[in-house]
Image (cartoon, rainbow over all chains, first blue to last red; front, side, top):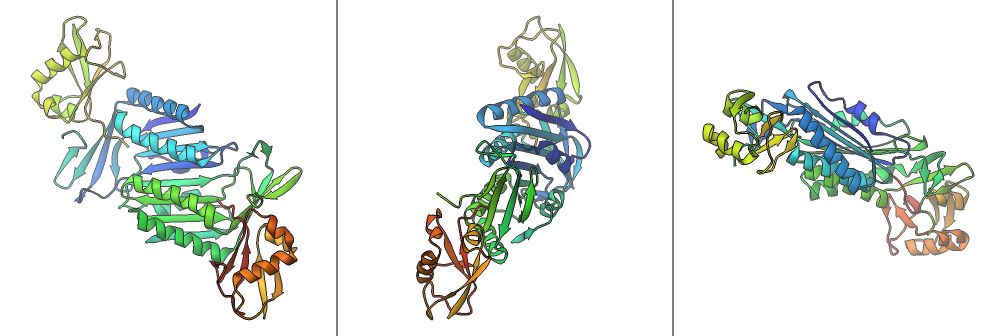
Length: 139
Length: 139
Length: 80
Length: 80
């Protein structure tokens, strides 16, 4: 199980993530890159703020990677998440999965981002011109 | 429909592909990167050679992108395929799809690589220490 | 026993602080802490949901809390 | 009419060249060209499958071929 899991307030480095995940045993890499959109539900977003409960978030991300290794024949998993203030176009999350055959990489990558959004203690605040809101906090 | 479709004998540039596909309207990017594995069916691969019927290959890739735009709410599609001699770890193909919501990007990216492998006139020759073979040519 | 509770996201706004101290009986269960917090901070009940974490693991209602535990309030997550 | 046929992948190896010329009756259909090629190059019949392309589009058996068309033999593809 070869994983690289990080939370950082520095800009995420796409190329370095891809370089880490590539290996001569792997024929396919699937990468998900989240980016900050300029709008949500038709409302203009000025910026986002991400806050993490870091030690627990790392632990939960490790659990997700472990589950993915059990479910699929994948060789390398990278999860990088950013914290702090992000502008439009910035990258809050990069997930990269390498496997010998591409189906496993696609399935695992999608599983990891879906599960991360459900279980990992990280919170996103959307900042609009006229206010701000913690996403998903209220029904 | 915003597409960038290229066939080239030069090394593919991952970061440039990602930069092209990113946009402020998009919240998710899915990227598939094919890489040359060191083995196939347990046999050591020394290198690969890719040959394309270029004008038809471009046309078929454009058709696949059009189908993806019809099937899913995606905003940008990039398909780059390399030709010529590739060494272990080199990248024969990059597919990148950007969309407002990630499910569409995942679905479209996977559809594009699966369909490309079925319909686009590009051929791969595996070169072993003791011979070579055009992949999939014989039953 | 006095327990320090970490707060994140909207819970931090509700508490007005990144952490608060609460007085809890020895070996109390997570559920008792939730009741106590909701009484003191009724806005917690307006959240879509929230969990407690004990030592970086999601807690069940009957998870016991001891004085050395790191306890946190986890409002609905929204990472990625 | 004389038609130039482009060949790729293993078809190039079978023909021993990246293109060959064949003599075909005017307005022949793709199927006739396939029969003719298979007679001249029996190894084509050992392929998992193969298609003809006319002007960069996959041809059907009844697609007509005219002298100005670009015709190619497309063995099983294996890109990606």
